[in-house]
Length: 445
Image (tube, rainbow, N blue to C red):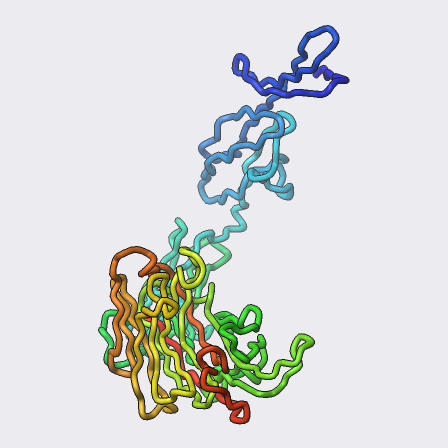
């Protein structure tokens, strides 16, 4: 192809002529004429190597990508992809990144009859946690005719080869899918727990356990479920710093999650932190839209303590606080030890406007374990203190300003110290350390 060069500055215009893509490069030449340079196009053909159908040829402009065709099929073989060189080791053609620079043929690559791998996935319904008394159902997403084998703790269960199985005891179960003539199997496992109903007194509309942490481990909380505070720096003028991964403040012990506020003057990140405490959340690891969130916990009582069980939006769809909402399942302050608080904050209703929609209850045993729960519906949220419904907030249907609670929220557990509310009557640093104990968190839908 003849190349044309120009000394003067270019202006480029793309246009189509008689079905051929042209690039017109014009410049102010001395002879006043314009020069044109054609962008070549190439032919791409496909060889299905015995498969069907064979995709039609394509005409592709230089530098452009080949449109990915439908995969062909071939009896007893598996299609791997297309390759520019017809052999078993060359790289597969990447339709997302590779461009054409000449006429090419793409060849189908098939797995050998001697190597047959199942391509589908095995699925157990319900999901990764189930309960005794419920059938587990296995399914396979591929087209091969498979048989199932159920196992417990890695050992095959005699006779358990159907698509359904009902566990007889708690533990880890798995199911494998295999097919005659295939060398690989696909498997998935599920944890079976005791059937745990919601605490008594609820509406009975949310009974399926979908997420839980019983805190029966040791050391730090399960990081597959929980995050530490993103910066450690508190809000609301609180005194504590939230260190990440520090067992002195956040640890599983004796079947509880223990969040401890300490006056330990710890050196953390090059600074002395006079008060440290614990904070964890489930953002991006556990978030829900509607359901029953139930927490059994025991609060500390000390001038300055401010434990809380609360929820924030995973994505601030309507904007920053309070536009996208906040749900306070429970708050407690040490200077008013016999009262537990329940609230919700929105753009239209919040304490800054003096019209928040919260309430409180009195308990003569604040340092005992109590069950705190909400049942969150499309039209309302109900708060429960042990087996009593103690508060209800209705969706007034006037818009997101009053009810942004139609998005997914995540859970937060923390023990603050001091601050605008917790420290409003002073603090007692000499009474530290103080512990906020959480027995369990359970979510039902």
